[in-house]
Every structure is written in structure tokens, then in C-alpha cells.
Image: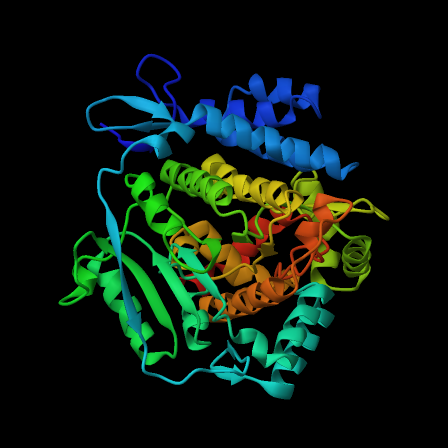
Amino acid sequence: MTTGVVFPVSDGTNRSTSALGRAVVADALRAADPVGARAADHETNWRADYLVHFRRLVEAGLGSGDTARAVAAAGLASLHDRMRVADPDGTEVGLREAFDAKPGVELDTAVVAGDGPVDRELSLPYRGERLRGDALLRRLDGWTEAGVIEPSCAEAVRAVQANPDWLDLSDLRVAVLGAGAEMGPTRSLLRWGADVVAVDLPRPGLWRDLLEVVRRSGGRVHLPVPAGHDGSGDLAAVAGADLLHQLPAVAAWLRGIEGRLVVGNYVYADGAVNVRVCTAVDALTEHLRAHRPDTALSFLATPTDVFAVPAEAVARAEQNYHESSLLRTLRGPLRMLSAGRLLRRNYAPGADPGVCDSLVAQQGPNYALAKRLQRWRAAVARQQGATVSFKVAPPTRTRSVVKNRVLAAAYAGAPAFGVEIFDPATSNTLMAALLVHDLRNPPPVREHVWQEEADGAAHGGLWRMPYAPRSALGLAALLGLGGARG
């Protein structure tokens, strides 16, 4: 029997992920786009045709920031109203009611301090080098010129480099949910001497690796251990907490951490479990914000989603579309042979904003919903006055991506379309620097939510490529097939 945070029963004893996804998307759209809500409600092939509905979630809010935030709030409310928490004895409660229950376990804190140096200079690992100083500035200029990152991303990183004292986060406790994640900021924060509150599954191998990183750093880690543990012995064997099954215990533990909290959501799981764990984190976030209103939030958005992008990006994509290249020569025949499916232009000329639809069908509706609820939480929390760092991360060769053969091949062929694929070390360090920037310079509430999401984006070039990303995916995979095998 499935326990912890679970999908609601949709038919008899069946807990359908598709039914949940359809219902939440429809509820989010109901007031802003009734036609879109009805289409989502009646979608008969959710797993294959979810893409259009997730695009409508963005398009519905383009005209008004208030509408976009209303869509976000409705989506979050629907998810929280529908998801359940199940006990081993078969009883279920609502997601919010789970925090009223007495935790089944209690957690104490073990603190481990590193004995390494504290690094007060921003540097970035890149293709076998460590870029700092002028070399880092040149790389930022190169990425901006190539359309790999938005100019606002380069500006933020330059500001952090020019203010190395910002790297001192000793006034904060950064709770990294998914502390061992490849894309997470744990290693950079520890190198900069931060206090990291690390939450991840109780897997001894994961914690041994993490504790070794701590000991080489100048930072400290606060980790959950069973109540009564004195912090001695093999910490890796007892550390960790399961957000799916120990949500009230983790909430009580984090409420007791001293100092101002920053809650960073870096969790990931395969398939439907990803929605469950991301829902658990969102419920935890809402709970902590209610008890500790000064809690700041941090999110990394996947670049393979739908985003509204500024006119500058649209103009650059149009320029790229008309520039001479082999693909331009082949574009006409390929479009004719594919009935217009291949190499469609990325935007309608002059669009402001443009809509870059980089959703990848192979990643599935559960992944799309898990990532979308993080965007919704960021929009709602920022409006409520929270400090929110929300950044679009670059396409990255993480283990979860390259194990998918189609995506691995497409990533290998992406440079032919002007898209740069990042190594995990480069991505997570760049994103950690942007987190520091946002904590020291809280991003404002803007007129439009899409403007908040576009700020500081490091999309790898997807927003400025000439072709709609999905219309180039198959060709990129063909071009990269040899590279992926290698």
C-alpha cells in the first residue's frame, strides 16, 4: 500500500496521475480561460496531449499579472485540496491536516563543521578550467553575445563578483531540500562558508559523500538525525529524512532551526513520485511561511517548459532564422517532407512577449506539473512579500537527463542549433551565484509574472534559437546520436 503523500482516489481504488493532472490544470484555468479549462477537463489522452494545456496556463496570464497570479493561486489550491496523506493503517487526511498530527518520529540536529578554507572569490568551473576575474567576465560576455543567457543573468553574476562580501551568508540558514541534488547549491554554499541545513533521503552513501564535501569546506551543515542521537559515530548511517513519509517531523524540525531560513526546493524523483515529493515540499513551504513569515524561497526552473520571453529575445531569434546556414538551405525541403512539423520558426515576427514552448513530450505530464507548481508558488509567495529567488537554469547533462536516450542524443546535437548544454558543476555554481544575488537584492514584484520569471534566465539559448525547440528536437537527436553513444 502506498503511504505518505499520495494521489487522490479517482475511480474505485485507482489513484490516477492523469486524472489529478487534468483536474489541477482545469481548476487553474477555470476563471481565466474557461474554454481552456473545459478542454483540459475533457482531454482523453493526457499523457500524450498535455503539452497544449500547459502552454495555455502561461498564455492565460500574459495580459495581466493579476490574472497570472490568480491562475497560480487556483492551481496551488486545487493541488492542496486534492492530494492526500495516507498512514500505514489505511487512514487518510488532507494535505494541510497532516501537519496537525503528532509526528511519527522526532528529529534532532547534528552539526558538522568543515576545516577547509572559506572561499570569498566567485569562480566558475567551465570545461576543465576554473574561471575567475577577467576570465569569468569574458565568459559572461561570450554567453550573452551567443544568446545563451539573458543580459540580466550576466549582470547579476557580475554584481556578485564585484561584491565578494555577499558570499558571506552567515546571517542565514539555507535549507536545501534535496541536498545531494546535482543542480543544487550545497557544494558552492559550503565552499563560501555558509550554514547549510541539509535535507535528503536517509541513504548512507549520499550522506558520506556530502559529509566529505563539508569537511573539505569552510562551511557547516545541520542535518536531521533520530531524536536522542548524540552526534557521534557514523552520522551517515543515521542522517536524513523522508519528505514523503515524515512530513510533519521535517516540518517540526525546520521550525526549530535558529536563524532566518531560506528554503530551497531542489528535490527530484522519477515519474509520478516527482509530483508527490514536490507537493510535499510545497505543503512544507506553505506551512513554514505561515509559522516563519520571514522565510525566503529558492527555486530552479527547468528550461524545457513554456516561458514568455522579452521582445529582445524574439528579435534575436528572428535574426538567427534569416541568417545563412546549412539548416536554412535544408529548411524548405524538411518542412515540406514533414508537413510543416520540422524547423518551425520559434516566434511570430514582432511578438512582445514571445512564447517559447520548450516542453519535451518525453519528460511527461508529471514532470511538467511538478515544475509548474514551483512556478506557481514563486509567483504567489513573491506577491505576498516573500524574498523569492526563481531562476531558469540551463539545459544540463544531469544523470536524470542523460539516462533518457532521446534527450541524451538531442543534447549532444543541440549546439548545431545554437544551444549550449552545461555540465552540472557549471550549472550548479552559476545558479548558486544567482541565489546569492537574489538574497542580497530581493527581486521586486513586477507588472507581469512572466517578467519575474525571465529575469536572470540562463536558458542555454533555447529562447533565442531560430526554431521552435520541439520542431528541432528530432534533428538534434539525429545529429547527436553519435555523440550520445560516445
